[in-house]
Image (tube, helix red, strand yellow):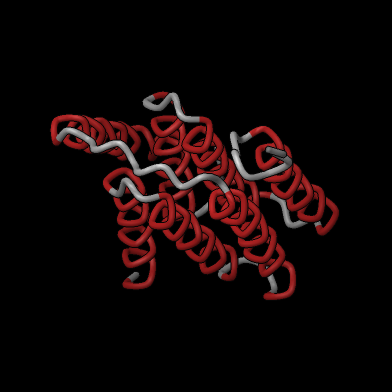
Length: 192
């Protein structure tokens, strides 16, 4: 019970950290902590060898994204006005309240642990908000990865296939590779 509440609050804290911080390093650290929460949630169901694939593939994708941002021409981050941050946090809390009210009825359809369902839906909702409230390609990729972490928490609670785990890890790494290719970078391949 204590571990489940700790996992819920750490997932929500990592999502809030990603919404509040304006530095890309802190956002990648928040996403890395979401992958760690996913590992701990899935370890309650799966063996460690299969669950660690999800953590390793997620952190490999984060390393790819961090490498391209590190090599990019580091422009100073645009200062956010406080009302933007407050709006994002209020939207996140609204989504989490809706999820908290809808999760018991969804739990009747999907027979998994309530903790896994709530964590997965909260992370998916945070990812959708992250995608919807941004126009920066890097933030959209982070929102997509957040959404996939939430989906993976729910789906891994239902299906324990090694093949599906490998394919999902491949999808995560390919999304990060494709986004690395398409993210704007002034220092890659530019000749003066």
